[in-house]
Amino acid sequence: MDYIVLALSWAIFYSIHSILAASKLKRILEVKLRKDYKWYRLFYTFLSTFLFLGIVIQSLFIPSQILIEKSPVLNYVGYMMAALGTIISLKATKEISILSFIGINPDHLIKTREKLITTGWHARMRHPLYFGMILIFLGYFLVAGTITSGIHLLCLLLYLPFGIFYEERNLIAFFGDDYGEYQKNVPSIFPRFKK
Image 1: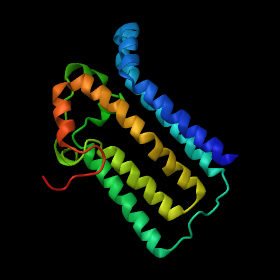
Image 2: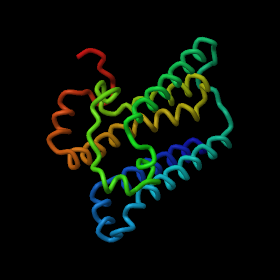
Image 3: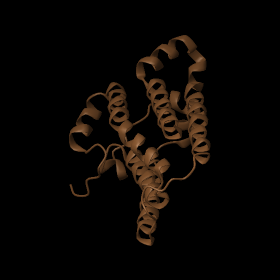
Protein backbone atom coordinates (compact mmCIF):
# COMPACT_ATOMS: atom_id res chain seq x y z
CA MET A 1 0.00 0.00 0.00
CA ASP A 2 2.89 2.38 0.80
CA TYR A 3 4.20 2.01 -2.75
CA ILE A 4 0.82 2.77 -4.32
CA VAL A 5 0.51 5.92 -2.19
CA LEU A 6 4.05 6.92 -3.18
CA ALA A 7 3.28 6.43 -6.89
CA LEU A 8 0.04 8.43 -6.48
CA SER A 9 2.00 11.20 -4.73
CA TRP A 10 4.34 11.39 -7.72
CA ALA A 11 1.34 11.40 -10.09
CA ILE A 12 -0.16 14.33 -8.16
CA PHE A 13 3.19 16.16 -8.12
CA TYR A 14 3.75 15.76 -11.86
CA SER A 15 0.11 16.60 -12.71
CA ILE A 16 0.23 19.81 -10.69
CA HIS A 17 3.60 20.62 -12.27
CA SER A 18 2.16 20.26 -15.78
CA ILE A 19 -1.06 22.14 -15.03
CA LEU A 20 0.72 25.09 -13.40
CA ALA A 21 3.28 25.25 -16.23
CA ALA A 22 0.61 25.28 -18.95
CA SER A 23 0.75 28.43 -21.07
CA LYS A 24 -3.07 28.63 -21.25
CA LEU A 25 -3.33 28.83 -17.44
CA LYS A 26 -0.50 31.37 -17.37
CA ARG A 27 -2.30 33.59 -19.91
CA ILE A 28 -5.53 33.44 -17.86
CA LEU A 29 -3.70 34.26 -14.62
CA GLU A 30 -1.73 37.05 -16.28
CA VAL A 31 -5.02 38.76 -17.20
CA LYS A 32 -6.65 38.15 -13.81
CA LEU A 33 -3.65 38.93 -11.59
CA ARG A 34 -2.23 41.82 -13.66
CA LYS A 35 0.74 43.31 -11.76
CA ASP A 36 0.74 40.49 -9.21
CA TYR A 37 1.29 37.90 -11.94
CA LYS A 38 5.03 38.54 -11.67
CA TRP A 39 4.94 36.56 -8.40
CA TYR A 40 3.35 33.48 -10.00
CA ARG A 41 6.69 31.78 -10.62
CA LEU A 42 7.71 32.21 -6.97
CA PHE A 43 4.38 30.67 -5.87
CA TYR A 44 4.96 27.81 -8.32
CA THR A 45 8.48 27.24 -6.96
CA PHE A 46 7.30 27.19 -3.33
CA LEU A 47 4.43 24.82 -4.11
CA SER A 48 6.68 22.46 -6.11
CA THR A 49 9.31 22.46 -3.36
CA PHE A 50 6.68 21.81 -0.68
CA LEU A 51 5.17 18.89 -2.63
CA PHE A 52 8.60 17.44 -3.44
CA LEU A 53 9.68 17.61 0.22
CA GLY A 54 6.41 15.88 1.14
CA ILE A 55 7.35 12.99 -1.16
CA VAL A 56 10.85 12.84 0.34
CA ILE A 57 9.45 12.74 3.88
CA GLN A 58 6.85 10.14 2.86
CA SER A 59 9.68 8.00 1.41
CA LEU A 60 11.59 8.10 4.68
CA PHE A 61 8.73 6.34 6.45
CA ILE A 62 8.42 3.49 3.97
CA PRO A 63 10.29 0.40 5.20
CA SER A 64 13.25 -0.43 2.96
CA GLN A 65 12.77 -3.49 0.80
CA ILE A 66 15.75 -4.38 -1.32
CA LEU A 67 15.02 -4.87 -5.02
CA ILE A 68 18.60 -5.34 -6.22
CA GLU A 69 21.45 -6.57 -4.07
CA LYS A 70 24.08 -3.97 -3.23
CA SER A 71 27.57 -4.34 -4.59
CA PRO A 72 30.66 -2.11 -4.74
CA VAL A 73 30.37 -1.92 -8.54
CA LEU A 74 26.71 -0.79 -8.42
CA ASN A 75 27.58 1.72 -5.69
CA TYR A 76 30.42 3.15 -7.76
CA VAL A 77 28.37 3.32 -10.97
CA GLY A 78 25.42 4.81 -9.07
CA TYR A 79 27.50 7.54 -7.43
CA MET A 80 29.19 8.35 -10.75
CA MET A 81 25.83 8.60 -12.56
CA ALA A 82 24.36 10.81 -9.83
CA ALA A 83 27.47 13.02 -9.84
CA LEU A 84 27.40 13.32 -13.63
CA GLY A 85 23.67 14.13 -13.53
CA THR A 86 24.32 16.85 -10.95
CA ILE A 87 27.15 18.33 -13.03
CA ILE A 88 25.05 18.34 -16.21
CA SER A 89 22.12 19.94 -14.37
CA LEU A 90 24.34 22.66 -12.87
CA LYS A 91 26.08 23.39 -16.17
CA ALA A 92 22.72 23.49 -17.98
CA THR A 93 21.48 26.19 -15.60
CA LYS A 94 24.65 28.27 -15.98
CA GLU A 95 23.10 30.59 -18.59
CA ILE A 96 19.77 30.89 -16.77
CA SER A 97 19.16 33.56 -14.13
CA ILE A 98 18.42 31.31 -11.15
CA LEU A 99 16.80 34.13 -9.16
CA SER A 100 14.42 34.84 -12.04
CA PHE A 101 13.84 31.13 -12.67
CA ILE A 102 12.60 30.55 -9.12
CA GLY A 103 10.72 33.87 -9.04
CA ILE A 104 12.78 35.92 -6.60
CA ASN A 105 13.64 38.53 -9.24
CA PRO A 106 10.41 38.67 -11.29
CA ASP A 107 11.09 42.16 -12.71
CA HIS A 108 14.06 40.72 -14.63
CA LEU A 109 11.68 38.45 -16.59
CA ILE A 110 9.40 41.36 -17.40
CA LYS A 111 12.19 43.75 -18.47
CA THR A 112 14.15 41.30 -20.59
CA ARG A 113 12.69 38.75 -22.94
CA GLU A 114 14.17 35.34 -22.27
CA LYS A 115 16.42 34.12 -25.07
CA LEU A 116 16.56 30.63 -26.48
CA ILE A 117 19.64 28.90 -25.09
CA THR A 118 21.37 26.72 -27.68
CA THR A 119 24.92 26.61 -26.31
CA GLY A 120 26.71 24.36 -23.83
CA TRP A 121 24.69 21.27 -22.94
CA HIS A 122 21.71 22.78 -24.77
CA ALA A 123 23.67 22.35 -28.01
CA ARG A 124 23.82 18.60 -27.32
CA MET A 125 20.20 18.07 -26.18
CA ARG A 126 17.10 20.21 -25.70
CA HIS A 127 16.40 19.09 -22.13
CA PRO A 128 19.68 18.65 -20.23
CA LEU A 129 17.96 19.20 -16.87
CA TYR A 130 15.70 16.21 -17.51
CA PHE A 131 18.68 14.13 -18.62
CA GLY A 132 20.50 15.14 -15.44
CA MET A 133 17.48 14.14 -13.36
CA ILE A 134 17.37 10.73 -15.04
CA LEU A 135 21.03 10.16 -14.16
CA ILE A 136 20.51 11.33 -10.57
CA PHE A 137 17.44 9.13 -10.02
CA LEU A 138 19.09 6.15 -11.75
CA GLY A 139 22.23 6.63 -9.67
CA TYR A 140 20.15 6.77 -6.50
CA PHE A 141 18.36 3.57 -7.51
CA LEU A 142 21.66 1.75 -8.14
CA VAL A 143 23.07 2.85 -4.77
CA ALA A 144 19.92 2.29 -2.68
CA GLY A 145 18.56 -0.69 -4.60
CA THR A 146 15.17 -0.39 -2.90
CA ILE A 147 11.65 -0.65 -4.26
CA THR A 148 11.08 2.95 -3.15
CA SER A 149 14.02 4.25 -5.20
CA GLY A 150 12.77 2.16 -8.14
CA ILE A 151 9.33 3.80 -7.88
CA HIS A 152 10.96 7.27 -7.88
CA LEU A 153 12.84 6.38 -11.07
CA LEU A 154 9.88 4.69 -12.76
CA CYS A 155 7.53 7.61 -12.05
CA LEU A 156 10.08 10.05 -13.48
CA LEU A 157 10.55 7.96 -16.63
CA LEU A 158 6.78 7.63 -17.10
CA TYR A 159 6.23 11.37 -16.68
CA LEU A 160 9.05 12.72 -18.86
CA PRO A 161 7.46 12.09 -22.28
CA PHE A 162 4.37 14.04 -21.16
CA GLY A 163 6.42 16.75 -19.44
CA ILE A 164 8.59 17.22 -22.51
CA PHE A 165 5.56 17.30 -24.81
CA TYR A 166 3.85 20.07 -22.82
CA GLU A 167 7.05 22.01 -22.22
CA GLU A 168 7.89 21.97 -25.92
CA ARG A 169 4.41 23.25 -26.79
CA ASN A 170 5.07 26.19 -24.46
CA LEU A 171 8.52 26.76 -25.96
CA ILE A 172 7.18 26.72 -29.53
CA ALA A 173 4.47 29.21 -28.52
CA PHE A 174 7.09 31.45 -26.87
CA PHE A 175 10.02 31.21 -29.33
CA GLY A 176 8.14 30.31 -32.54
CA ASP A 177 10.18 29.23 -35.56
CA ASP A 178 13.48 29.58 -33.69
CA TYR A 179 12.48 26.74 -31.39
CA GLY A 180 11.07 24.71 -34.28
CA GLU A 181 14.44 24.90 -36.05
CA TYR A 182 16.28 24.05 -32.82
CA GLN A 183 13.91 21.11 -32.34
CA LYS A 184 14.78 19.73 -35.80
CA ASN A 185 18.53 19.89 -35.23
CA VAL A 186 19.02 18.91 -31.57
CA PRO A 187 17.83 15.67 -29.93
CA SER A 188 15.35 15.90 -27.09
CA ILE A 189 16.91 14.12 -24.16
CA PHE A 190 19.79 11.85 -25.12
CA PRO A 191 22.89 13.91 -25.88
CA ARG A 192 24.52 14.20 -29.25
CA PHE A 193 28.29 14.41 -28.96
CA LYS A 194 29.18 14.85 -32.64
CA LYS A 195 27.97 17.56 -34.98
